[in-house]
Length: 116
Length: 112
Image (cartoon, rainbow over all chains, first blue to last red; front, side, top):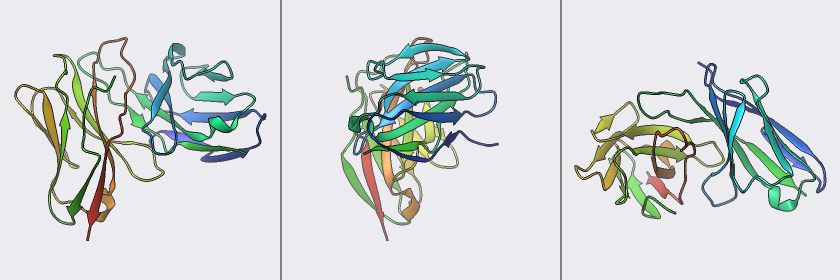
C-alpha cells in the first residue's frame, strides 16, 4: 500500500522561471488536494480535484498557478514566473470519497520550493 | 475563521501519556473532529477522527465530550518520535466542504 508520492522533493529555481510539481495519489483515490505551507504556518488549501474535474480554487491560487489532473490519476501544479514569495512547501493529499461519512485526506511528503 | 482552539505548546515526559486538548465550541452536528500531526519538514500525518463517540486506533485515542464542544487526543505512551505539531481540525463531510483548515496547532515536545 503505497502512500501519496510527490516529485521532486526539493526544487531551487531563480525568480522568473517556471516550475512544475507532480503528485501521485494513493491508488483509486478519486479526490486530490493541493496545499501550500510557509515557514511557521499550517498548510493552506490551494485547490481540489474530484476525478479530473477541478472543483475549487483558493484565492491564494493566482493566475500564475495552474493545476491539472488530466486522467483523474496524477496531478501537476505549475507555477509560472516564480517570485520569491512562492517559496514554500507544496503539499498534495488524496482521499477516497465516502458517502457514508467523512473521507480522510492522506498527505504526501511535499515539495519544498526555494525561489532565489 | 478559526473553528478550533489549541494551546500553543506543551511538554511531555517520554513514556507518559500526552493529553492534547482542543476546543471547538461552535462545532455543528455533522462536523467531524480530525487530528493530524506534522513532524518537522514532513507532510501532515493523519492520526484519528471522530464524530460523537470516543475512538481508538493504534496511534491514539480521541475523547469527545458529550456536548461535542471539546475533545482530547491521548497519546498513551509518548516517545521522542512523537515530537511534532499537532493539529485539531473540524470538517463537514458535505460535498462542498472539501478542504482541511489548519490552525497553528500545538507544538508538542517529548522530553527524555
